[in-house]
Length: 205
Image 1 (tube, rainbow, N blue to C red):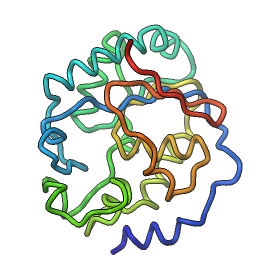
Image 2 (tube, helix red, strand yellow):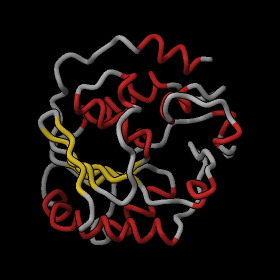
Image 3 (cartoon, helix red, strand yellow):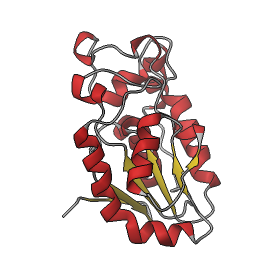
Image 4 (cartoon, rainbow, N blue to C red):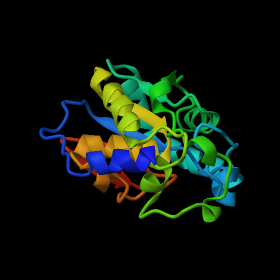
C-alpha cells in the first residue's frame, strides 16, 4: 500500500536540526460522535459530543491568557477547515477568530473514511494504520504539508486541529523520526506546549 511504503521510506530518516519554529500551543479537537463510535473520520466529519464540547470549554480555561497574548502578536490562532476543529476553536478561543488553514486538516484516509476501525486491518498505532489507507494521503504528504505550515509561522501561535495531524506537528517540532510520531499520546481536552524542541502536555486542573 502507498502509506505503508511511505513509512518504509521514512522510517530511517531524521530531520536533523530542530525546525526554527516559534512557540506553539496545540489543541486537539474534542470528542466527536464518530470518535465515540470508533469510526475513521479523516476528511469526513461528525459533530462534537456533549463531552467534546465540555473538553473544548475546559481548553478555554487553559488557553485564555495565552490566546490574548498570541492574538496581539505576530503569530495567530489557526484551525483546520474541518467542522470538528472549527467548533472546538470557537469554544476554546471564543474571544478570537481562528485563521482557517487547509494544511491543518486531518490525514485523508481514502476508502476507509466512515468505516469502523475494528473492521479494518490493524497497525502498530493509529498513525501507521491511517497512513496505509487505500486511496489515502499517506504519511509523507502529511509531513510535508505540516512542515510547510510550521515554517510559515511568524510568531507564537495557537493551533486547533486533529489527533494524527497533531502527532506529526508535535513530532516535527521535537525532532522525532516518522516511525516515532505515532507513539506519542493523543489526548483530547488538554493543551500541548511546543517550544525549544520539547513538548509539554498541560491538563485541566
